[in-house]
Length: 115
Length: 114
Image (cartoon, rainbow over all chains, first blue to last red):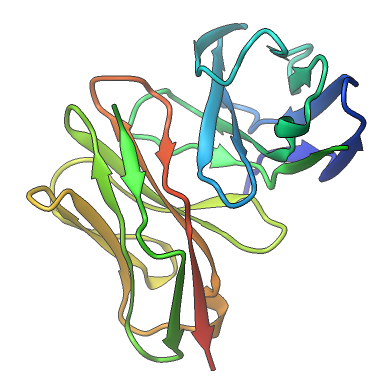
């Protein structure tokens, strides 16, 4: 069964450092997403991406965040200068379509710890 | 604005007994509703969805959910729980007319006791 894969599974970084979280979506999917879950809180939408550009973003996705699809397979989330409050589990997801009739497939997550 | 509430952080049930994991939602239009499950060290796995039609939706691993528009609920159910069902369950909603991203609840940890 095709799946979304994320690397690394756990990343520890110092405050102020840049981090890049990587995702390989399902190969024929067209829509890509990043969500995050701060420990004990709900899963929150960050950004959606289609046709090489951001289609939607939440208030959380400020100028410190950026996304990129550098090649035909990877989808990355970059945090330019990490803050303690960026510590969370980050989930990548992909969907064939962007309609409610299809479900998004999620990766196993990257746990980011900012110290 | 869309929102989802999962009122129980933890649900414990004995193996073989029926289980219910509760979810209520709020959207401005008609909802698309989803249940996802997360096993340890795994991603969110899709279980089932309600789009339109029958209020009772059947999904993977014997789970089902009932859409109740008047109560704005979408509770997840299974007639007979297995120990292997122990996991974290997330309810999510998407507004048919609004933003295309999912809004999640805080999750309910289900523990099935042998």
